[in-house]
Length: 454
Image 1 (cartoon, rainbow, N blue to C red):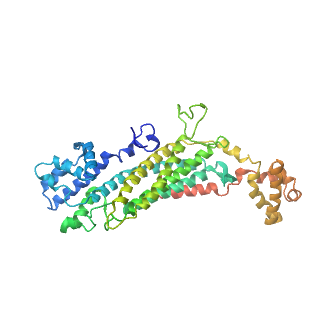
Image 2 (cartoon, rainbow, N blue to C red):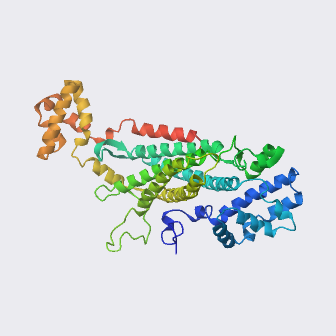
Image 3 (cartoon, helix red, strand yellow):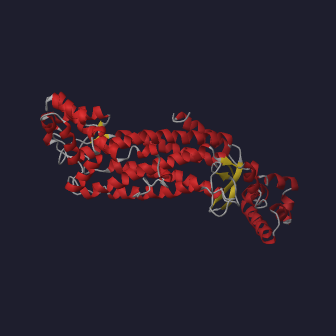
């Protein structure tokens, strides 16, 4: 029986992908522990700290394919220690006395923290890949719908005309900042831990600094300036950035859901043959993919807060806070991978109904253009007077169920100040989108100049 959403065969596709589950699973986690132990032993052998023969033997046996993972897990449960059984499993595979030299100096948290960092680094490359794909899809939407007029809404109701390209450009700009955030944190984030029991490297001897540099180079990680076992800001920052990314994608998904409402009908997530919306209402095409994203993004935001709690460490090490990361970190990484995968598909084939967008611009009977009328009228009667006149005409029209054009022309002062042709011209919503299209061009130029788009 499945123990959670990530290994539940019926719903796991809504929460992550096979690609990310292969990074954050028992086998890969244990292999990353062994990657540390192998690198550590090999570099100790090179520096003459342990025999080279022992180092080579240890490295050769630090392979998950040689280990009974279930047996290691059972022993971890029995002795209540996460690493010792894994170390002993390799020791048994080594020849003669060679196994005595495995884990010769580091503490458990050195191994586990560095291993998690290696897992996150694997996922990080995939996040960048998928964000670029999403960015390119958004750029395409910006170009295709640069001039596609639609209703801009504020406080949930119609406000003024915009273009769909402008809306997509906002999303693109936001994703561009997230790509930048991921790249900027790399030098801070991707460092290993090799500090010993309380951070002083006392167990590594006089060659500790050189050994650390060599081990981290072999693992493809940077060297931390100081012990980070009691300083968990790196992991907290990373999950909070994932929270930002998934919040943006959750917002986009929620916007698609809102604009897919039957009464609006402006955007639709992709529909594939055979996709079922309801078990009792066969006609329905539900925004199920976007709903999955909105729901999953909430979990990452809560984990972001949890990771901030895990920064509260007592003394030089604190197992209670550390264990909290074991839940929140992989969960956040898995969910982020799933959200990116879903939104990559949604945005690549998003259906934009330009016809309904245009239709909805007229649904208020012209009242959407009240601001424009006011400014046009203000040139003839003054701003405050124009505001009062347009307000009177608006209330008269809305209360009596007549169009804005008729309401304006029924007002003697407005009719005296503006001709019928002038009124009709200012009530065309497609010609009141401001610099929207030019802003789209500027955003596209800026994002392409940043080098992360095609």
